[in-house]
Image (cartoon, rainbow, N blue to C red; front, top):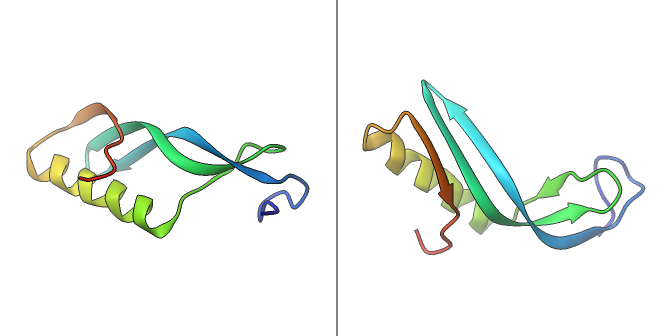
Length: 76
């Protein structure tokens, strides 16, 4: 797939680090599957990965977490 941001590179399967911040919560997910542009490095996540990231972040917020670094879990 051609990168929608730079329009020059092709995206390839890879893994990235995704930091999320909201209302005093900072959580960093490592090893998140993505399509990564070989030119600009921008990452694209499919709908399932995005939904899982948001669900895990909401669970962390509900548990009172303020700062966390986690390895991404697909089946969360």
